[in-house]
Image (cartoon, rainbow, N blue to C red; front, top):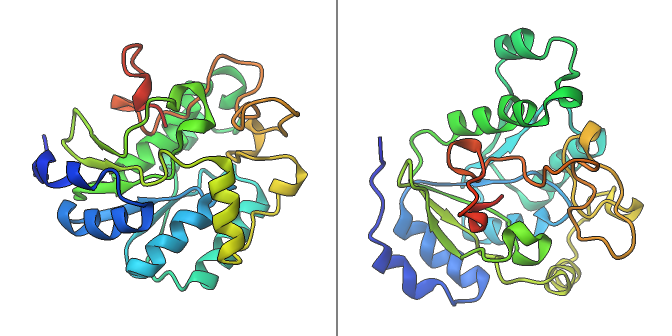
Length: 241
């Protein structure tokens, strides 16, 4: 069932505003909005912007139960540093894990199903009832994100996705982090510019794109949480997460 959402004409004029202004004006127009954050390498930028608007805005953090310990510690420390008051920890369904991944080795045989089980399905549950959500995706991160728009509408739900940092570069991210003295994820200095689950994330070598360390050795480039139905459609590369 499609959810009620603002007419696109109310949001389109905001698309070219600087990211903080875009967020401040778009969020109230969308309605009930959550931010979805991995508390990864670049997450502090957008979380800082959200904290300037409303520290009580819901922030959904998907704990796949396979994250790096450093990510869990960073999530706690950064949320406290920014004064965020509504961090919603979302985990996979325990019964589904017992049925489909009892030994936590599903990622070795079926990475798509593992992401569906640990990320896509939990997020779908967490977003129920929201009119829109905020993502930290950026065009420069990978070819699958090269056509990313600041404002998207999910075909299945009618829910709005806001991508305030779509046009930002790595230099923009670094400058913002420095300007606001924001804490960095501890794994960044160890060669992890993109950080996901521990079993499927490796350091990135010089010259590789920032997400080359995700699902290394396979054709998989996205977890699926930003795809229609959790799956990538060949004609919708711009919908990639």
